[in-house]
Image (tube, rainbow, N blue to C red; front, side, top):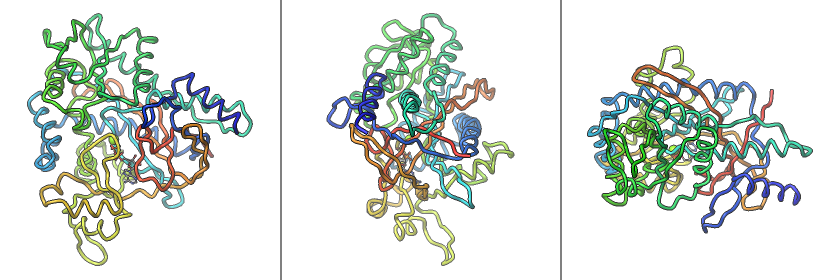
Amino acid sequence: MSNIKQQVIDFSLTNGLIKYNQKFQLVHAPLSLTPHTIPRSVEQHLRALTPIFNQLILRVSQNTDFLKEQLEEAAQTDPFVDKLLKLYVQFPDPQPLQLLINRNDYMLVAEQGTLQPKQVEFNTISVSFPFLSSKINALHKYLQQLPNFQAVVPTNPLKGVANALANAVIHYDVSNTCVLIVIQDHEKNVFDQRGLEYKLWEKHHIPCLRLTLEEIANHGKLKEGHLSINGQIAAITYLRAAYTPNDFHSPLTWKGRELIEASSTIKVPNLGMQLAGMKKIQQSLGQEMVLKRFVEPEHLQKVKNTFVGQHLLNEVISTPLGNVLAKDLACQEPHKYVLKPQREGGGNNFFDNELVQKIQSLSKEEELAYILMERIDAIVHSATLMVEGNPQEKECISEIGQFGIAMAQGSEILENKDVGYLVRTKASDENEGGVSMGYSCLNSLSLSD
Ligand code: ADP
Ligand code: MG
């Protein structure tokens, strides 16, 4: 094992499969040495779902009235949602081309003798790991030369995401432009972003600029409608920040966002897409009447099958024992639910006792800014997880994310496809799931027949 351990460390450090740990030391990314094995049919099904969800989210993102109506109540007590919604109304996107880069995350549950993917969430902003998931896959492919290592399903979302950005730059049709990557002040997941930047340069000869929102406010301006940074036009503004209120710590940060929104730069995502990724929207789409508005009839059942129950806290739910408020049900059996605010980036959800305490602390108005999701009872498998050079076998659960790309001009869809997967494997007693946050390990899929 020690030989393998060193090989894994060497490969990781050589290929950028790295991250900063909580102490800001450079370490190999947390990873699984054993792939997550799933049936071939499930892997095919997951890929087939991606274009359907791409189209669904694009349609939701284009429906201003729907987004306003759905998020209005949450906005009353959630200042972040309120501000985003106001910007959305104030700055209708002047850019007709939409590029959606998203990741749909699932867990597998055993249902009627088969495995059914259940959606954890749909990510539309700062969709991370196109680079690191390609690199963990490369590591697993390298390890196959050793005895007892399983073959893995190849994946390269880095290539798909870079190609999509490059295509959009071509559509922008202005010479000598760049991709502006909006970053956080103290980004730990920098290598995942850098990997994409280097790919864009190496394969497409597109330069990237990396700026915080404040820097964009300070150095950017509108030039004939374009977003110009020190004289360089940003064909695309790719947000790897701006998904949390922490990124808006000064009035200048909001100025930076406003400048982006006022310009014709292709926003990945634009405000409509960011809002479409809110947990409240996911909860609303769980209602068949709502879902029907955005999904073709032939896809309705497939999409519905991926949903677990999601409720507003004040929703009346009928049970065999009579009608009960969702929040009361959750407080009676907290281990069956997850309480979610309208936030991204991990570490924001409430589980178990904290869920009960949080629900009890909320006013009637504040309740409307949260959704209650049934907890997904994911299948458990054993895996060898290696964190900071220390391999340990554990009982685990895995979350599979499918990367989707869609490009649209109004209602015309120019491109719509799946570009690969990400697997995150974590000890089955962990609640949350982030790799950067230190909960999960990167992994690959392998197939069983
Ligand atoms: P964020 O947008 O902050 O990443 P998520 O909704 O993806 O929030 O939740 C974060 C993590 O919490 C997930 O990666 C998953 O591990 C866990 N989680 C979220 N929803 C559920 C659920 N319904 N059942 C089980 N685990 C969940
Ligand atoms: Mg998310």
